[in-house]
Length: 484
Image (cartoon, rainbow, N blue to C red; front, side, top):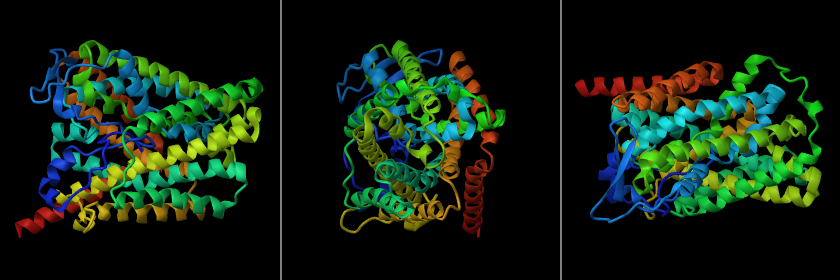
């Protein structure tokens, strides 16, 4: 669940009936947040500037739109801050505990490996977005490289992940409270249902949290992480690092696949590449600095989670709260729990806002049933998409409550969809960056890495493959019907 992310407009733009004729264009410019991350603020810069590509495939000097008159204003520190805000999200509240439960202390190796493997992918996404700016995210690159059908498929991957990723966020927020209040399962899932439905209801009335809230959310996340790691240090016991690999080497690779949830969002910031000071130099430098900081933060959280034994069973979903309580007592636990609840609400709000508009745009293009494009008669908001998300989310919550699936099993489904999305993005990079030696190499290396990781997802890997097969059959049926 970057990606309930993090891209798109800061304003609560509503879809009016007059906008129906612009459905195709709306899809190209819609926001696609990654898992668990807030929408990034949009100050209109996407319309004002873009970075001209250099001959080697790297971002070139900014081109200023004469109508807007915007000038480069983002130096390296600001670029790094924006990247951190796009990548670090609510997944870090949940994944360290789940990964430690899955792979034991060896999950730390998976965090280290993912921190390294993500660098060429991040650079590839950065170059793609700098050369082909547009807030449609990865689907925008896939559309440019391979055409509208594949771009639509990428949009469907995102849309299908939201009714599954949203409940994961909701249960995470509820369990952070449950640790303190000693709730039973009924109370946890009733609270989770409220967390799921409240943002959907707000979106019906066109009330979307402003994009500027991202800064606050990211500051809260970093504050929680620093507090958790600092509070956990006195309770670190290296004896908990043995046995180091209790579930075998395969569990480490599977844990790495689960961690992909926390490493999405690199393509978001370079939509602002036209405002970078010296973008040819700072675009990639910003990614490298950010990747280093993200790696240090994630490794610190992962190590303290394992070395303090703050995982296992229900504790895995609220590991940070447990670490803080050991040093600061209930007051520290409450601070983390309230922050986690706020983060998960904001993330799911971003998810539902973007996904409902994705559903509308897909329906307008004929790539989804017409009812998904239904608008509220008064507010002009995409109620068809919101109802789809609500129904799917309630079904997912029921599966979790009945213990038909575990939280780790459910999160694997949207995670597989996001990995499939980035496979498409890396394939787009191989084609769109082929005139630059380093761009092509980074894209090829990234593609090899995500393709190698994908089979180790296990049965969840069938989720995006099944969705692609269904959409392909639907397209064939429509083509045959038109021929008749």
